[in-house]
Image (tube, rainbow, N blue to C red; front, side):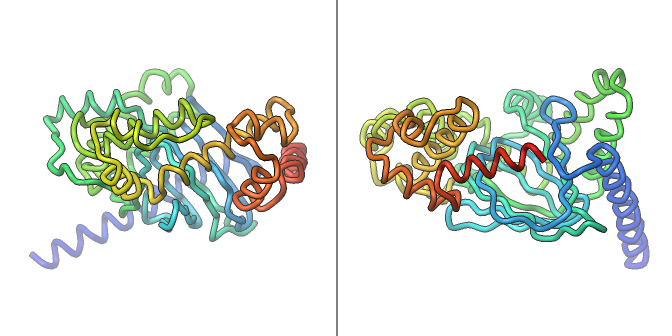
Length: 310
């Protein structure tokens, strides 16, 4: 019996290495230069030839898989490290810092991101009669070991990129399989919390939605907690458990990300962008911006534009 188990594990390991090699080859072919490309709506492939400094961004509900290299994601005080043997799930919108750790020109970092649709997750939960078993708070992001079945489905999804006609018909079916395997795997409860009608994580997801709608307004913790039917202390505790940030820290990061977008996309200067996102003091805005992004606002935007022109 032990021998059969060992043989099965060896077969799975060989199969996964074959799938991982194919995934790496297909990403290299689809992304010939360093970039992150949306190859189909909600499906992104990335290639980078060197380690990077932390890049500030907002993670949406998504699945992230690496074919080659490794990456760190910093959320508040938490660090998530994953590589070709692991996958990362994010279940609510989270300001975070991502850093490519392992990458060279000979062996570039190769990654995949698949956006997760809560409606599709809910549909599959009903079909699979999969219910949330825990009502406790859960981190909004985590890393788990990648298994052979999930990796196989991911490779089949990327394989469909070679035929747009087949992608339109078959990709939704393969995506359903991927989400089903996630629901049945280690992070199933995390996905179920994304769409659950009860549980504190869902209340915090609602709070994040409220913060996004009015991030430029003064944060009124008492009012928000009341809307969610929670005490102020309970709201603070559960928010930090899920997001690794206080509501005020979360709002500040949302403001600064939006200010960056306004300067890049609408050509606003730093004072205008800061005012639009709720800062009344320009020097306060400049200090917070440099602390998050590493450069003063205008210098940061110049660097981003230079990088885009390369």
